[in-house]
Amino acid sequence: MRYSRDLRGYGETTPDPRWPGGARIAVQIVLNYEEGGENSIEHGDPASEAFLSEIIGAQPWPGQRHWNMESIYDYGARSGFWRMHRLLKDIPVTVYGVATALERSPEQVAAMQSAGWEIATHGLKWIDYRNVPAEVEADHIAQAVALHTAVTGQRPHGFYQGRTSMNTVALGCEEGGFAYLADTIADELPYWHVHKDRPQLMVPYTMDANDMRFSSGQGFGTGTDFFDYLRDSFDMLYAEGAAGAPKMMSIGLHCRLAGRPGRAMAIQRFLDHARAHEGVWFASRLDIARHWAEEHPYWPRPRPSQMARADFVARFGSIYEHSPVIAERVWDAEMGAVHDSAQGLAARMAQVFRQASEAERLAVLNAHPDLAGKLAQAKRLTSDSSAEQASAGLDALTDAERAGFTQLNEAYMAKHGFPFIIAVRDHDKAGILSAMQARRDNDTATERATAEAQVIRIATLRLQEILS
Image: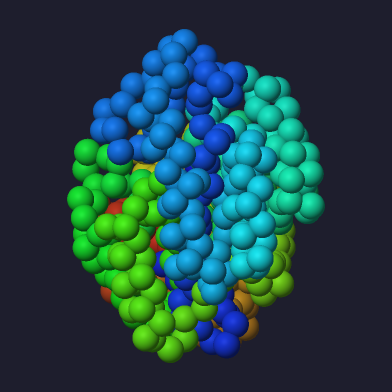
């Protein structure tokens, strides 16, 4: 089974985005423009809208229009948008514009363009695509791009569906013309997503620093709540940036929500707070996407989880000495992006080794050669073992040293029933000899556990060399 989700991401150490001017944080504000694109009988939909409004617990009205719901959305276009425009017109904002909403709002579109805002597509209609067939959603995306281009005079460079299906990101990749997709909340930095061997840049969005939580039962009650959350998010990310790990902060706004006066003050207070700091880059999502693509272009890397079984076993079958069964069982089990790193694949191989039977684990131990033994002299070691023994100088022993190793190997094997195993890359020649002398006298149960741990360590070092 291949696990589709990437739970590793960038790992413990994130890449330096190298924001322009050495900025410590990139602040990205999205203004969602959905008014006139929401579910409505008048728009040809089967029911009224029920999402992201002042009406807590609203339900769709099948076959009926909903006057209060429609007028809430009307407020966003008639009043909320203009308040947001006054607050943000000097900042590089990204608008998530629903194509049919933009079509119904020519004056607002002109104001967006006058402010120099990026207008990304927010799909054809502001509807839930959860159960929409893939071919229908693909057609809607194509219609959205065409209508967006006709209304604004330029095709959109970014795409955010919002109310997605499991097909949305794949369809966005296959459309082929987007500089970035934003239907992900998986990170605080852009990242490359590969679909059918084609890389697509993802610029993550946010559901937490988002005014949508004014419309939920558990969320922001006042503008002060919202400001406090934005300020604390900014301060944490700014501090991380100052410490050498800059990120991006996404903020999601809606005209009908944040455009209300009691909430708009939170936006003004946040802007004042952010502007009081040095090293803050206000950017559109397209600015960020273009910067990332230039500074961190996609480059293909080994992806063990995507290899064919025969190729995987051929490449990793000798990680556990002469024991391809470990690699075979790893491939046959669940694999995903977390196993594409040296640490992740080493952990899974170690797990499979530990789950093997006692006889199978003993066979792996016995597959390892003696250190500086007859196989080494006959040059019959695997390439990995040859390189490892050479790294500790075991390929250039004096006759006396070789005799000493031979004696210790024979004594160890006679007592414990398997060869002495140690990760030689962790030691020099003297350290290996010392360990052999000390471990020879251990009881066999202790030594068996030690040897198995060393097998895992050797495998980890080998994978680090291959996948670093």
